[in-house]
Length: 164
Image 1 (spheres, rainbow, N blue to C red):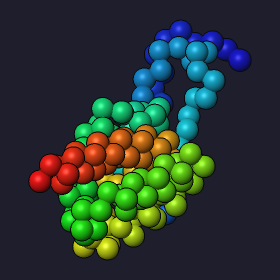
Image 2 (cartoon, rainbow, N blue to C red):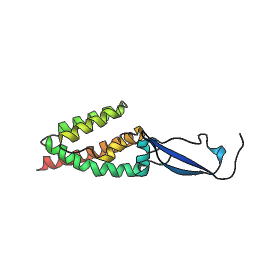
Image 3 (spheres, rainbow, N blue to C red):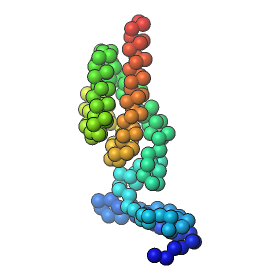
């Protein structure tokens, strides 16, 4: 294979179920430095990339995911805490289930549990969480952050309940 030293431009084609939906360009400085020249983005990855939730290589943007987790954890925790009559055992059990699903690699079950709880507390599952759930690496990153945030919030709420 011939090695090129000049800049090459590749077009990433984003394909949905209905066909072509868009494209993006990437500049590769040296052809021989890349084993995989072209890859296809899934529709879900394209959405996450457009919202800057993942990098162009598909890896999660941890800072952005941390922000998203922080935005949705507080209202979720408050509504859950209120609906359980401020029972720390129930919140601990829910966190234990989420952690167990994540440790076992059962991320879709963790999302199903969150969706169920969102419905019980009368909230709609946020669009960002639905988009994130389509990409396993991003979902794992989100779930870890979300669990940490919830754990911290529930601990604070339990302490406030004990004081009053």
